[in-house]
Image (cartoon, rainbow, N blue to C red; front, side, top):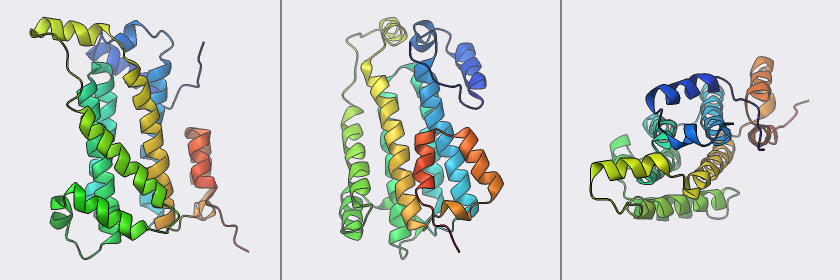
Length: 237
């Protein structure tokens, strides 16, 4: 049996699902809630890491897009128990796009918030790849662009064969697809990519955090995600 420690406040999320989506297959068919724990851990860690960056780093991008990223990313916690692949694909795409626009606003500071919002993906892709060419996080930018492209296609790729509401509801209530397990890995990858990029842009140094923040991170977030922050450590003499 798979096992992982219960993430902080996961019990509240589980109660929410049981109350709101009692027929979700993720409640009915997975007694140890492993997948839900893994997903919740991803979202929770993302929020906590973002809080640390907000309190300790001074990135000059338009915060609207970073807020959009986290709002869409958190919404995956609602979409997952609904078990709708198109819904989740939309949230992955829009959260990725929002983060890319946030990074774009840091790199191209002459663009107003509305100009960034109106920037199409084709120009976003070209300008970001040009800006990060030869830099240590170029591959991370390329991977984010790839995720955006893949999930743009996925939004329209998942339909059912049913043409009545009950058949559609039954389908989403009774089927677990490997797609959802892959989504958890994508969420984990999104965190890694976004954290690596922000660490570089902010010249993040783990040792600059106060002791209580370092302890909080060490106790609360996944060890592999913690290592993304700890590896940016410069001990000052």
